Length: 95
Ligand SMILES: [Zn+2]
Ligand SMILES: [Zn+2]
Image 1: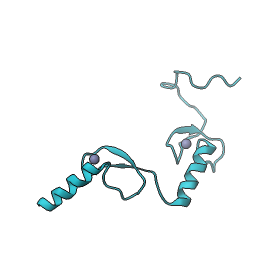
Image 2: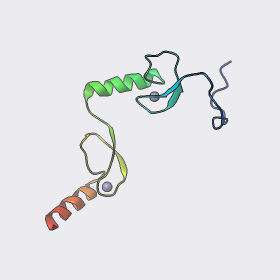
Image 3: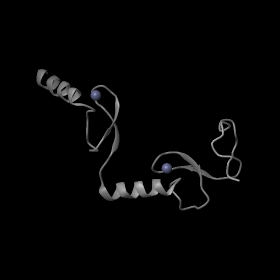
Image 4: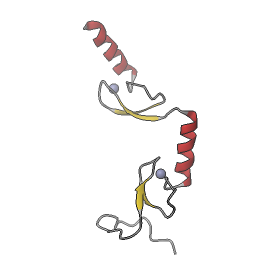
Protein backbone atom coordinates (compact mmCIF):
# COMPACT_ATOMS: atom_id res chain seq x y z
CA UNK A 1 0.00 0.00 0.00
CA UNK A 2 1.24 3.50 -0.80
CA UNK A 3 -1.02 5.37 1.58
CA UNK A 4 1.74 6.53 3.91
CA UNK A 5 2.60 9.76 2.09
CA UNK A 6 1.18 13.06 3.19
CA UNK A 7 1.20 12.47 6.90
CA UNK A 8 1.96 15.19 9.38
CA UNK A 9 5.12 13.57 10.73
CA UNK A 10 7.58 15.19 8.35
CA UNK A 11 9.33 17.33 10.94
CA UNK A 12 11.69 15.52 13.22
CA UNK A 13 11.93 12.48 11.04
CA UNK A 14 15.48 11.53 10.23
CA UNK A 15 16.30 10.15 6.83
CA UNK A 16 19.10 7.69 7.37
CA UNK A 17 20.45 6.34 4.13
CA UNK A 18 18.20 7.55 1.35
CA UNK A 19 19.92 10.29 -0.69
CA UNK A 20 17.97 13.49 -1.06
CA UNK A 21 18.37 16.60 -3.14
CA UNK A 22 16.38 19.61 -4.25
CA UNK A 23 14.44 19.64 -7.47
CA UNK A 24 16.09 21.97 -10.00
CA UNK A 25 12.70 23.28 -11.00
CA UNK A 26 10.45 23.64 -7.94
CA UNK A 27 13.09 23.41 -5.21
CA UNK A 28 11.27 20.71 -3.31
CA UNK A 29 13.44 18.24 -1.43
CA UNK A 30 12.95 14.70 -2.62
CA UNK A 31 14.48 11.28 -2.42
CA UNK A 32 16.08 10.13 -5.60
CA UNK A 33 17.16 6.69 -6.63
CA UNK A 34 18.87 7.51 -9.87
CA UNK A 35 22.03 9.58 -9.85
CA UNK A 36 21.21 11.56 -12.95
CA UNK A 37 17.80 12.67 -11.76
CA UNK A 38 17.55 16.42 -11.17
CA UNK A 39 13.81 16.65 -10.63
CA UNK A 40 11.26 15.20 -8.25
CA UNK A 41 8.64 14.64 -10.93
CA UNK A 42 8.44 14.28 -14.68
CA UNK A 43 6.27 17.38 -14.76
CA UNK A 44 9.13 19.39 -13.26
CA UNK A 45 11.60 17.98 -15.76
CA UNK A 46 9.33 18.83 -18.68
CA UNK A 47 8.66 22.33 -17.35
CA UNK A 48 12.37 22.95 -16.79
CA UNK A 49 13.47 21.93 -20.25
CA UNK A 50 10.58 23.69 -21.91
CA UNK A 51 11.67 26.83 -20.11
CA UNK A 52 15.29 26.34 -21.15
CA UNK A 53 14.17 25.97 -24.73
CA UNK A 54 12.12 29.14 -24.74
CA UNK A 55 14.71 31.10 -22.84
CA UNK A 56 11.97 33.15 -21.27
CA UNK A 57 9.93 33.32 -18.06
CA UNK A 58 7.96 33.37 -16.07
CA UNK A 59 10.64 34.60 -13.71
CA UNK A 60 10.30 35.03 -9.98
CA UNK A 61 11.60 38.54 -9.38
CA UNK A 62 11.44 41.30 -6.77
CA UNK A 63 10.25 44.81 -7.57
CA UNK A 64 13.08 47.32 -7.20
CA UNK A 65 10.68 50.00 -5.98
CA UNK A 66 8.39 48.37 -3.39
CA UNK A 67 10.31 45.13 -2.82
CA UNK A 68 7.30 42.93 -3.51
CA UNK A 69 7.97 39.57 -5.16
CA UNK A 70 6.26 39.14 -8.50
CA UNK A 71 6.17 36.90 -11.52
CA UNK A 72 7.51 38.50 -14.67
CA UNK A 73 7.46 37.37 -18.27
CA UNK A 74 10.77 39.15 -18.83
CA UNK A 75 13.90 38.24 -16.94
CA UNK A 76 15.07 41.84 -16.78
CA UNK A 77 11.77 43.22 -15.51
CA UNK A 78 12.23 45.68 -12.65
CA UNK A 79 8.73 46.55 -11.48
CA UNK A 80 5.70 44.54 -10.44
CA UNK A 81 3.18 47.12 -11.58
CA UNK A 82 2.83 50.31 -13.59
CA UNK A 83 2.59 52.45 -10.47
CA UNK A 84 6.07 51.38 -9.39
CA UNK A 85 7.43 51.98 -12.86
CA UNK A 86 6.07 55.52 -13.04
CA UNK A 87 7.20 56.12 -9.46
CA UNK A 88 10.74 55.14 -10.44
CA UNK A 89 10.77 57.20 -13.64
CA UNK A 90 9.25 60.20 -11.90
CA UNK A 91 11.91 59.95 -9.24
CA UNK A 92 14.59 59.79 -11.93
CA UNK A 93 13.23 62.93 -13.58
CA UNK A 94 13.10 64.79 -10.28
CA UNK A 95 16.67 64.10 -9.31
ZN1 LIG B 1 10.04 19.64 -8.78
ZN1 LIG C 1 6.52 47.44 -6.88
